[in-house]
Image 1: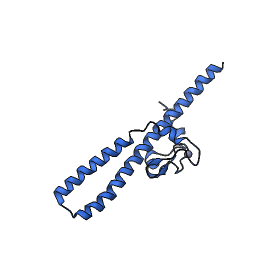
Image 2: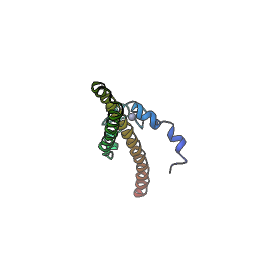
Image 3: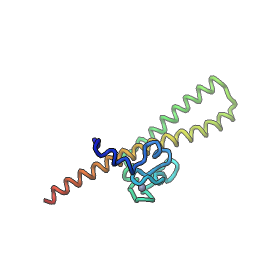
Image 4: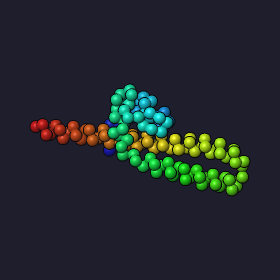
Length: 137
Ligand SMILES: [Zn+2]
């Protein structure tokens, strides 16, 4: 779509992996994306970008949590069946693993959805700008 502008656009924007890992704002690349470990902030504290508006479409986050949790439960049952580790050890390990995996998946998913809707918002803005110019004439 934006083949010509790609190189100039990429300059100010963080790559997806870095953005997901550090919670970088898609507009200014500051670490302002997450208000809590897996909750997107309402607005960027640095550039004022309306993050809540951009996040509105990503209701599927609950599905991501369920899928990750189901996969972990399956893995836990398999390990329990195969290795029979002490229960206390399992409880500690699985608590840590579950929290880390769900948070990681949610952060990656939310960051991805936010970056996609940010791109769409940019495209929509340029379209609206063009329409507005025509309407003025
Ligand atoms: Zn920002």
